[in-house]
Amino acid sequence: MAGKNCFKLDEIFAALADRTRLRLLNLMRDGEVCVCFFAETLGTNNPKISRHLAYLKRAGLVSGRREGKWVHYSLRKPEDEKAAEIVESVFRAFETDPEMLADRKKLTSVCCELIPTPVAISRAAPKMT
Image 1 (tube, rainbow, N blue to C red):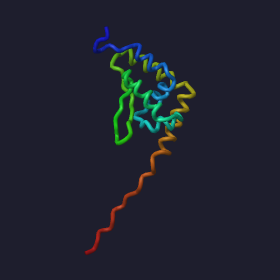
Image 2 (tube, rainbow, N blue to C red):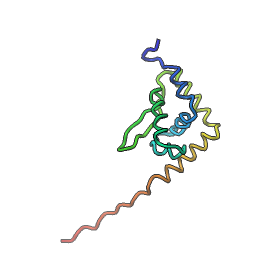
Image 3 (cartoon, rainbow, N blue to C red):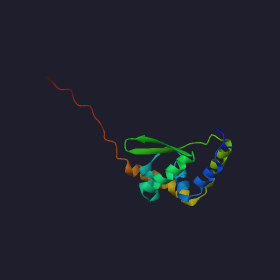
Image 4 (cartoon, one colour):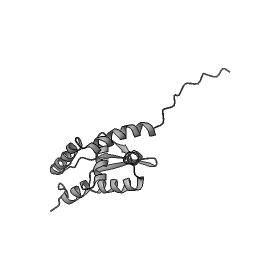
């Protein structure tokens, strides 16, 4: 019964049935996030975060992009309209959840702390020969 345009209802709900995975989805609401920021924000280790992100990828809710040794994750809107409605409902619930709000606030401070301040590059004076 699962055709090209159908989604697997059990996979969507299983992916959404874990608090850590919900917190990860919440952190990606504003865009792409590096795995290192997830670990720092949620106070856990990269392997645990990576396992949960793999689960979300299998359910079709996130995608990853490799940049050097790090993977950056972003939300994928489900193609199926019903699945997209379910996910949007979950995102609306995040807006009133104190832990989800605190996580998003912490992510912004973690990102700023972990990214080194840019080094100013100035032009060298031309050599006189």
